[in-house]
Amino acid sequence: MEDIRSGSILHDIGKISIPDEVLHKKGKLTPEERRIIETHPETAYKLLSPIPFLKKAVEIPYSHHEKWDGTGYPQGLKGEEIPLSARIFAIADVWDALSHDRPYNKAWEREKIIEYFKEQSGKHFDPKIARVFLAMVEKGEI
Image (cartoon, rainbow, N blue to C red; front, side, top):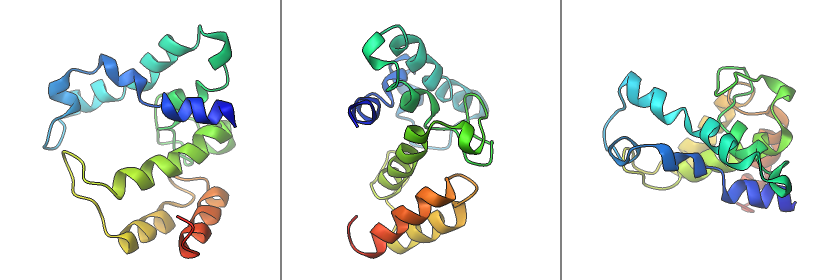
């Protein structure tokens, strides 16, 4: 649990290498800006992997943008190749991102987020974890 907590806190530490004008851009990113953003997991890995007590925690900063169907980054991992901690965190991270205003997008309505999660189960998200998460949402636990 401590590894998940530490990895969650540090999940976007690699963004320290992203120029502010890219990181806080209000409009759509260009392909080059997207490429720059997509370097942040590798930066996080380089920063955190030498620290012995963060050996397991680094899975989240490094792998939280991987997708169940293999279309994520930085490694293009697929399914259970993605560390469990990163699969769990990805769901929490996307829920948080969609439910709050961001510089480039307004928060979504709860029902729209739920539909998105159902649609992305087995694509972006581990279907088993998504099912458990959505059950918690339906019960009002989230």
